[in-house]
Length: 561
Image 1 (cartoon, rainbow, N blue to C red):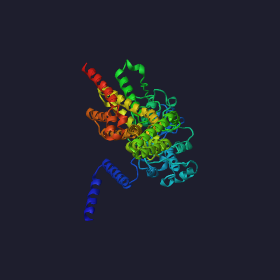
Image 2 (cartoon, rainbow, N blue to C red):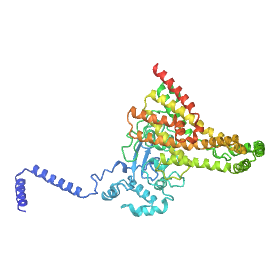
Image 3 (tube, rainbow, N blue to C red):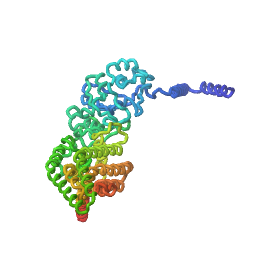
Image 4 (cartoon, rainbow, N blue to C red):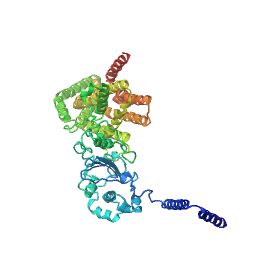
């Protein structure tokens, strides 16, 4: 205490002897210091309460376009073509943990100094999701709104990004859209949910405008997934979840970068690379999405397999009965010569097999095809999209396979052009051969199912047993070749995915390319080696090898020149 008193006495003497400007400076310094201490003592008070963060700025000007960036409505982008110059920005209402942003900030700095529209939007979104107790500000207004705009079926909020639109069941039309609460606030705004409408309307944002380019960049993920037409393909996808958003100048027009076929003469390399990427992406999916050979009226394949099986059975019945009669005659001759009842037992066994095959073959074949289809879908979803909570369906499997192929074709941009050409041609050759296998399954299974009773007619003879054995072997092979191939594909795709996550440089990219060649060019050979039971259905590996060998030989001659 004595030391503090001595320090204070010296300070007062110094101030009395100092000039007036110095006294003023010291006083101002003390005030600033006290103000800083007070500010640091208030843990939740903002440093600049009059300067709201950019993510809290909301523009409710008539004609502005609002696009949610996730199914929960926690993040938005707005585009205003009616302002001068046109403007756009990002609005974040909650972070990736679901916590409200600037909730206590708004209360601390006085509501009147915060953007009015932002608090209305935050209250409406909270009312829509049914969590008004989260608010420390405008809780009463939120509860009033909840009676009119509460979501009938709230979306799943597990994901914090554009993929939430099509994951976790949020693509279901019955799931409530965040545009519901935005339209309740203002009917002057245009709200576009990517699941229902293209997020960047050219007529509204302006063709070849920078505003359109911003929109297509910031919504690139949903445009690609939902296959909307993109007017400015040169745009790059931007971070829409709280990172650095696109920093383009909305008022600066940009030339339309749409790439057309007639530009081949001006940019042949870019044109060729673009078309090769498109072709690889399409062909690589054909065999995975090929229809199943179910014996039905054509619901899945568009081919009435059931009608053709019935046709074959009816028109081979005469031959079947003739073989049965012939086998009985042969058995009778053997019994008379050898006087052994074994031949009679063989005839009875043969007739029983024929009856069972005639009555149950279609049922059993359909069950096997259905099981193989279910397994193929299950391994695709679990292997390529394990976090999906959607019900297991053919559409979910197609979605997982499509996403895997799209992620690969996007990485092709970084390869050397010569490597890109050779790799693309090899993948196209392997993909086409694999697609032929899957398409051939339909007529092969149809023919084998329709002639199965014919093969079962004479199993009491060595020739008949061999015939039946080969028949069943090929039938099982062509049914199981699809799930076996999908298993190898998923394993290879997962391996490529783990490499591509840390891939950098040509060597790493080419390593991923080799894995992709493995799952296309060598897929039939791998299936034949890992699953020997399907060997009869993969005997055409030589065709794939020959095609790709020709491609590589031609590429070698091209490089040599």
